[in-house]
Length: 192
Length: 204
Ligand SMILES: Cc1ncc(C[n+]2csc(CCOP(=O)(O)OP(=O)(O)O)c2C)c(N)n1
Image 1: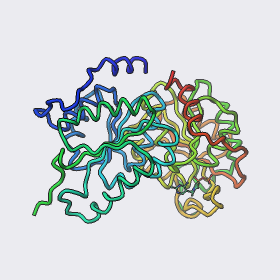
Image 2 (image 1 turned 60 degrees about the vertical axis):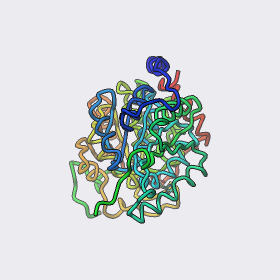
Image 3 (image 1 turned 90 degrees about the vertical axis):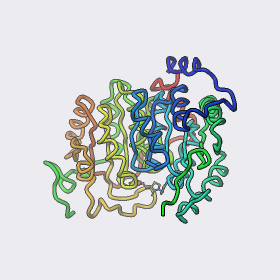
Image 4 (image 1 turned 120 degrees about the horizontal axis):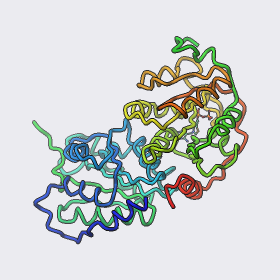
């Protein structure tokens, strides 16, 4: 733990509106996870997150695998945090709708800095009504629980938001949710 | 019981034992600061009643997440053995975690299932294990080859001692009587988490 703290502290700080446009969004996310010593990545797959998941699997720094359900992933990173390892979970908007109980009865009351990345579906060109409805429930739930939430739409703010928010989550022992908008990732489009 | 026996001991010829008694036996076996995660309700109440080891985590809510939490601790600390104590109703809520654990095959994880055939803490409504489901067969089918019913107390001790020694993951199921839990955990999640983290060195 001491070791990893030093490493994270030594990582270069990112400034706002950095020119990172030559990198793709998933390269930036992976870099920031690594720079902050977030080793364990547990996910339930999402099409838009596929390049990020692939890159994380390809990088031996990470321990990564799929869980069968988003709640399970939340439980796993909670245990890892208590054991001294930082973790993040990746999920789709529909997956978020399965975790309010785990947030309200475990993560929030136990003060676990769970890092939650949501690939946003249900808006900006959604073709599936179910996804659109589920999307409407996400922010009200996060607000009701008082969970710090950032919707990220711009590439030039991505590294700054993730970097600073991971540091804040760890320092204040509070979870944080990053909602990655289709404006950033391109989202999933309906193919006729 | 209609299920087929899955090994030498099956759900229907395993002795019905007491959760607090088995929890005491299990805790008495621990000699290397093993971490123990007690599941929602009775599983953590009886763990609490055995004395509050700093390496115990009492899960107050989040029904079904005992094994995922224990698995997370096991990933973070591969040198420490981690034990999950989970009720049958709770495990049935999150069966997928058995497949995940089997796929990752952590050597330092032992899962103990207290199968009383009911959701005892909410009024003892029957679970499917009382009629048709066999959680050891489910675990084996999920890829957890080292999954066994404990025939009696001595067999439980033997299985648990072997699990701590040999490579895991292991799952031990025990049929449990209808006696209520002996203690009740102090409901202070932050203090529980802090103590546990310091107890296992997750926080210095
Ligand atoms: C998601 C969720 N659903 C339902 C409950 C209510 N609940 C709490 S404990 C419990 C039963 C647990 O049964 P089991 O794991 O078999 O343990 P036992 O009570 O028999 O010891 C239920 C239904 C809950 N806390 N959370």
